[in-house]
Length: 132
Image (tube, rainbow, N blue to C red; front, side):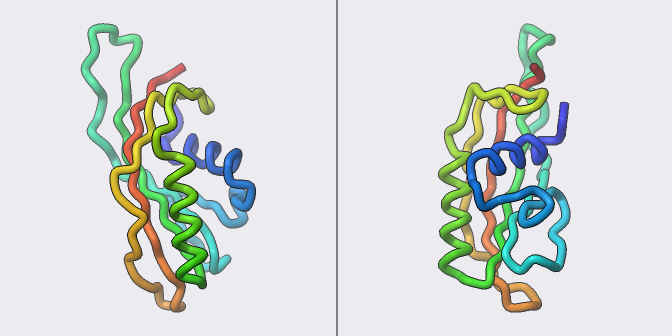
């Protein structure tokens, strides 16, 4: 099973045309440039759900999407777009996983400015998924 951020990256690239992996969308590491970008971080989760059928183990992962932007308004708008794109999705196959539910657990939240005066927003999610 791929890490959850890799599958989420695929959804965002497919759904939000302005996001291009490796150009303004990243996983696990936020580069110093470009100024305006999105980074997905795997943040653990609750582990596996217990089930009677061990062939269908449900992973309960969490992840955070971090939006960095020169503009407060544009950054918040993108964070909201990401939240609305992901929240409530379910029963979808992406890569080697079936995403039974993606749920926003908090956000978007403004957490401040970075050392270059760029705005930072975060949105947190929980995912229930299983192997295909």
